[in-house]
Length: 153
Image (cartoon, rainbow, N blue to C red; front, side, top):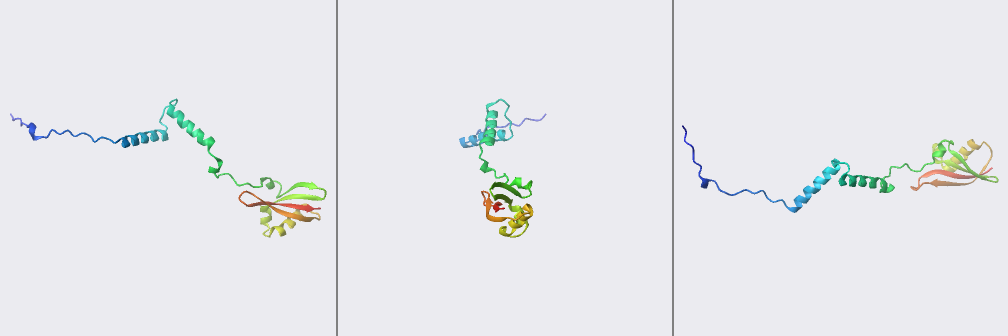
């Protein structure tokens, strides 16, 4: 039979290896990481206060964020003019008539507005007239949307 080997106690040192203590900053960082991970992956149970806080944060963002943060709205255009073939009568005072002419219609002729507007109005009105004034209508970005034309019939 084999003889057992004796292990002497003094051969191995008795130093206990203790895990290094985590700093308080490391503990706080781990806690924040846990909260962020649970919030992003929505792992809180419905009805818990954490779940309610996340829902309130989302609703607050939706309803309280200013519109200027989201520039996805279309720029102001004279949409009614698409249905009126580019010309809308805005009002009459005796023989004077005010028209709103779409800038896209004016641009389609490839001429200056002062030259294109009489041609457009002549096709539309089919009678003699005298243009008194032409004023550009601009949006908030100074883009010309149309022209207000005062005509004497």
